[in-house]
Image (cartoon, rainbow over all chains, first blue to last red; front, side):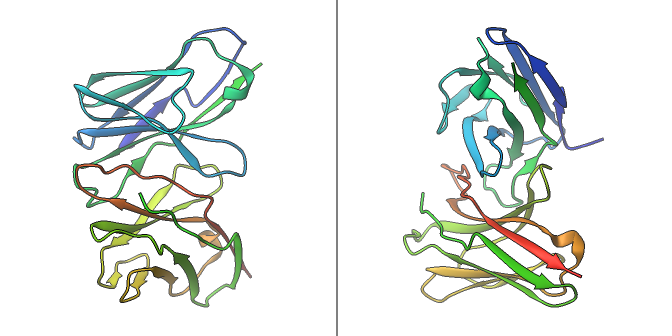
Length: 113
Length: 111
């Protein structure tokens, strides 16, 4: 099993719909992150969480919300999806010191039509 | 967090060493240099990181200049499977650890 699992892998949704992307990790790390990647660009940080009670906005949090249900689970929601949120979304986890780098999931490809 | 500058793209012949440069002239004393790579829309993969000493692991070597304002990632014997976008990132590995990705370098390994 993968260390970081994202579901769904692909999703097409309509404008205005609410959608949740889920992420779970088996690394036992406290820190989790959500990134977004647009074609030809690098990753941009949406939200991050350093433990279950800690949630922080990243570079581009507008239009998104998150929930840290447990140490192993970190969900990203789009309350009312819009076409420019069409992107590849990655979840990641790290230990408290970044000593072993981030471990990323395989990504969720989201298309908003 | 300090920003980095990398070339947009580089080519390398298969079997030769690939040397990927990165400038980080505003790096702070407690910031590490991290390297990741992303193979065509897959999740980024951690390669290596360092503070001020050179580092080597099974994937690559990291050479950091004495003033820490630049670094080079070395893939000693590039293969076609090393074709990817390589990201150089600086960040504090401690309490404020969060990585900010730039645009990276697209390394194309040629047969």
